[in-house]
Length: 361
Image 1 (cartoon, rainbow, N blue to C red):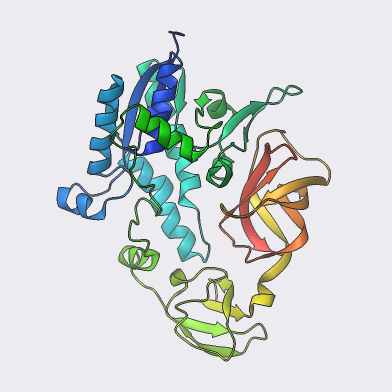
Image 2 (tube, rainbow, N blue to C red):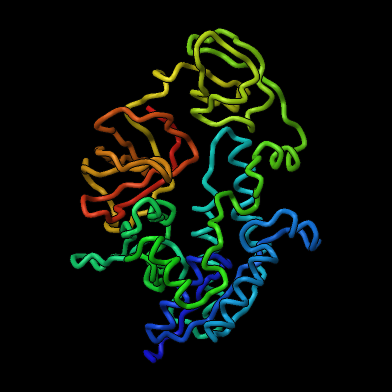
């Protein structure tokens, strides 16, 4: 034993289960915790919707904890999850932006709240099944998130806004592995979830129908005008909550050429449509910045930028004025989306900083 205690957030999936397995094999005292985030108490409703941390996932996590012979708890995170993730998600769509709820969940639920709840348990660290690494800058002592060895499974993008204190008390045991090896390890350990599929949807919208979810939460959803880039009215949209930048399908009207959502203007309740060519822009603005590898950027800096989870890092130059970040890409990028995160890496895959996109420029 290394006399260190780590609380592992266990979702009932393969990744978090193997994270607990690895940490136990490394000699940590491991405590498994499942975060109960569901807003409804009705068992049939929860089972019908499924999703992360539903009742079935809790039972899967409990079985894994029993197999690993580790302490296990289910903790109530409902109020925190509603305030920091669901309410924020609704507000962002209402204001014409497209949020990434996983980023908010990581910062405010999986780290801020989980760690505060873990301290009374005597925890030295918390851990999750994310594919990422933590590095420390030898020059200034700061911690950062680094890209994992997991290839397309790398999740460093969704972790850009963790604080220095959170990083100091975090372990990422999957950072050196690919997904295929993680499943092999689960099978070798005879974990019942070894072949369980990965969850692909947002946990609180398992059917992936954002529109229906938002419609149930909002009182009035007003129709408005579709416009072209010259201001000409093209038709009516059914409400800005149903659309996001780059969208082509389900516009409700047809044209002689493919048309896409280029811009959403909530104050006027208008949506600008354009051809694919018009979706490409040279840069972006971002706010709500979080610094990792460095504590500030005082001059134009060459970086590799990601503007969405699946985006391949691309060369860019960033600079900051009055707390606002400006990014100029080496090559134009498609469908830069307000509300999404822009994350900036150095050449070694370390996160320098990141923020929330406010507009394309």
